[in-house]
Structure formats: structure tokens, C-alpha cells
Amino acid sequence: MRAKMTLDDLKNMFDLKGKVAVVTGGSGGAGKAISLGLALYGADIVPTARTLSSLEKTAEEVRKLGRKAFPVSCDVTDPKSVENMMKQTIDEFGKVDILVTAHGIALRAEAENMPLENFKKVMAANVDGTLLCCQAAAKDMIKRGQGGNIVTVGSIRGLQGHPAGYSAYGTSKGAVHLMTKQLATEWAKYKIRVNCIAPCIFWTPLTEPILKDENMYKIFMQRIPLGRPAEPEDLVGGVLYLSTPASSMVTGHIMYIDGGTSAW
Ligand SMILES: NC(=O)c1ccc[n+]([C@@H]2O[C@H](COP(=O)([O-])OP(=O)(O)OC[C@H]3O[C@@H](n4cnc5c(N)ncnc54)[C@H](OP(=O)(O)O)[C@@H]3O)[C@@H](O)[C@H]2O)c1
Figure 1 (cartoon, rainbow, N blue to C red):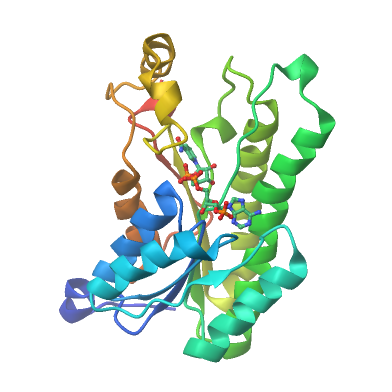
Figure 2 (cartoon, helix red, strand yellow; figure 1 turned 30 degrees about the vertical axis):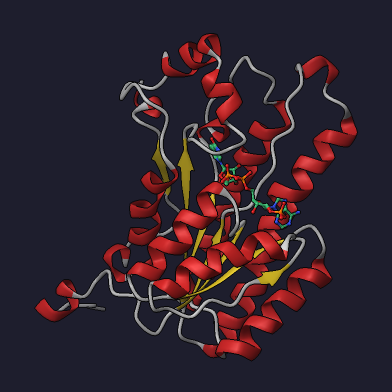
């Protein structure tokens, strides 16, 4: 079987006009940058998270770019809430072409004292939440028969341990990485590609206190060959690549956006 591309296909391989993208964590550092990035290349955006008021800010900026935005409140740990979010998306736009799961929480504690309750909270948001959103999007994609692209958000902590108390978070991100490969393998027959971006630490209001602590900054930078934390915007190119025909032969891939951390 051949899937030849024309010069026009190559020229337009990053074009997202007419596509609908659901971005979980759409009010967060990564989710907002990714929403704006996908909108810049033509997609209409459904930013979703629990707090509707903070999603409105993302939606406003998407609309300023001339794209449609339809913010929907959803708790990704609750199957009914995820189902309802996807239903509202389909009612509004008729389909979902792209899902980016950019939600997540991190609760850190030394491993021997990590409360089981916190471990479970992290797993519920990062692992259960990712699975539920992928299932909901894939059901629509399978029904419509046109395929689709899913980009999960893992972390360099899903590959490597770290001394600063990541037993819950790292475990959850390791699970997201393998879930990505599993879903990619199962859903390839529906032309649904599932890939993952796995960033190193990037600047957000939540990481600012860590990164502004001189000692912690040094610890983190020792492990990043490019010598700086990422910016949320550093994630956009990877998501764009994985959401468009530019990556048409790529599925089940974990793309480390980590300044070279995974290279040594
Ligand atoms: N920041 C980093 O350095 C870093 C590094 C590597 C990977 N990551 C990963 O990148 C992703 C985004 O991180 P970020 O730093 O941009 O996060 P962030 O700024 O803290 O934003 C988190 C987002 O997730 C939403 N969220 C949290 N729990 C939720 C739930 N139960 N249901 C629905 N939405 C929920 C939040 O909104 P509500 O609270 O309103 O629900 C918010 O929109 C996460 O998966 C994170 O693990 C981050």
C-alpha cells in the first residue's frame, strides 16, 4: 500500500484549518500555549479544565486569532464529566479531530512517606484522566471513521527518577508513556495516531517557586544540557508536528522536549 504525498500536501502539512482540537488543562501553562499554537495553524479549540473562569482567558485569546473557542468545564477523573465534555464538543462542532491531554497534577513527598491518598490522587488525574479522555475522543473518531490524532503529555519524570520526591508523579507519567504506546498499537487500525510529548521542567506559576530557588535551579539545570528550563511555547512545535500530517508515519512515539536530558 502506498500513501504518496503531492507537493501541495507537503506545503500544507501543518495546516489545521477545519480541525477541532480538545485541549485538557486548557487553562494551564502548557494547555494555554498549546491551544494558541494549534489555533494559529487554523484549528478551533475546546479548552477544558475544572475552572471555567480560567478557561475563558484562553478562549478569549484564541478568538483574537480568528478561531472559534468553546470552553467546557470538566473533571478528567470523573467518567460522566468527561463523557459530558465530549458530548458538548460534538454538539457544538460535530466532531473531534485532535485531543491533547495537557492536564496534570504533581504532589511530591519523600518516597517512604508518600501518603497513599496523594499517590492515588496523582494517579487519578494523570493516568485515569488521560485514559478517560483518550477513550472519549477515540469513540467519536472511530464512529466517524476519519481517524484522528491524540497527543498525551508525559514528562521526563516518566523516564528517569529524581531525588526530589516524584514517586507518585514519575510513576503516573511512566504509565502515560506506556499507555500512549498501547493505545497507538490498538487504534492504528482506525487511523488514530497516539503520541506523547515528554517535557523537562518548564516555567509556569507553579514551577516558578522551584526555579527561583537558586539551589533547586542548579539541581535541575545540572541535568539539562541546553542549560535552561523550557518555556510553555517550547512544547507547541512538538504538539503541532504530532497533530498534523507532518507526522503521518509516526505513532506510539514519546517525544522528549527536554533540552537533551534524555540524551545522557
Ligand atoms: N510544568 C512542568 O515543569 C512540567 C514538566 C513536565 C511535564 N509537565 C506536564 O505538563 C502538563 C501541564 O502542566 P502545567 O505545568 O502546564 O500545569 P498547570 O499550569 O498546573 O495546569 C494544570 C491544568 O490541569 C487542569 N487540571 C488539574 N486537575 C484536573 C482535573 N482533575 N480535571 C480537569 N483538569 C484538571 C488545571 O485546571 P483546573 O485546576 O481548573 O482543573 C489546569 O488547567 C501536565 O501533564 C504536567 O504533568 C509539566
